[in-house]
Length: 74
Image (cartoon, rainbow, N blue to C red; front, top):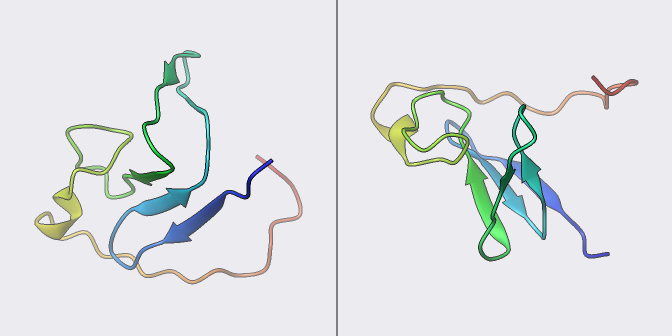
């Protein structure tokens, strides 16, 4: 299975690289074209869960850094 990586972009989206299946809370599957996808984390995208660049104009600011790995999955 190919590796999947998720990179947190400063004041921007989560950049996911690798083949993934994205499923919403109702079980609907999103078709992912290509190997990279940017997921919104600012809440302003008109194309959620995907990033549309809204973070550039809506004042979103978040530059958290990774802490210790969580001990349980939510």
